[in-house]
Amino acid sequence: MATLSKTFDPSKFSKKITKSLTNISTGFNDPTDWISTGNYALNKRISGDFFRGIPLGKISMFSGQSGAGKSYVVSGSIIKNAQKQGIFCVVIDTENALDEAWLQAVGVDTSPDKIMRISASMIDDVAKIIGDFVADYKAEYESTPREERPKVLFVVDSLGMLLTPTDVAQFTGGDMKGDMGRKAKQLKALMTNITNMIGSLNIGLAVTNHSYANQDQYNGEGAQITSGGSGAIYSSSILVMMKKLKLKTDETGKKTTETHGIRAVCEVIKTRYAKPFERVEIEIPFSTGMDEYSGLFTYFKSKSLLEKSGKKHMYVDKDGNEHLYYEKEYNNNKDGILDLIMSEWSDDIEERDQVDTDDDDYDDDQDWIIVTKDN
Image (cartoon, rainbow, N blue to C red; front, side, top):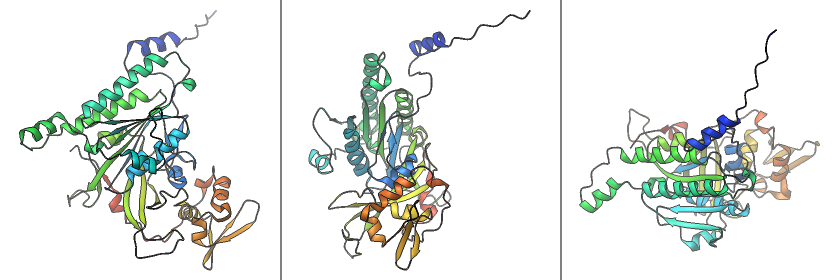
């Protein structure tokens, strides 16, 4: 007669692993907390949901040209929305650019119990700040159920300005030679370690980074290169490339010759929650800040939800009612039309066939190739 084998009990094995090894966790750590970017269309491109942006427990990177709106989105809008959810924010300012008046102007609460600003310029210092915090966090809340632990968002603005000891020594010594790839190696170590540290915790990391045009005619000339090497790209769960264009429409939607703000073309190069390589254009007027509805008209048009009728576009809701508006009326969310479309197509919109939107403002694909160099 065959004997029945005992059922394996993994609890002892799991406990031994997590107790004896560093930065090890068991089980699945799917995100449970999401922070809106402040723009519905960008949220959808990143997470597959109009109301979710970036998750805690992961690294999200926004890279792009100077003045493309990276700091506005990350250090402004994302921090503001994190605070609304009771998430404490620690912003590491490597550019000495985040003034309190500017943060308050974009809606961030600068009270000490809501945000901590740290000025740091060295990769080693950032690693120690985050490493020490995570160690103390784990020690204090290890026995606390995850849903009851405090939620924290780290922001590094920006990775591109961080220095290595070699950089400092060269500056003080007056010998400005290359760092022989040391910065890329240190950034890779920083990002890789943080990825493993925060995966099972209620801690997220959002970073900005610089990009520049590749000059190598044999390796994607004109393509956008993210500074600091490939380590940051590989470690990030989300990578959004941003490009700056001029906003030349006023508050009424009328086109003018004057520049009224920034049009940031965002391409989600990397995401684990939606289809990658999708674009959206968001508007950031100087006078009012980012328009949370910008980009939705073009997005819904690309999904064939809006049918052109003369100079207007028609939306037929799921009850068969027809809604006919001009483009600027859609952009202004007249009668809550964009809210209606989002509510009706929040889940299955990606099943729609995509069509050309005749949007000549986007550049061709060559400008969006990401070349990774460890430099």
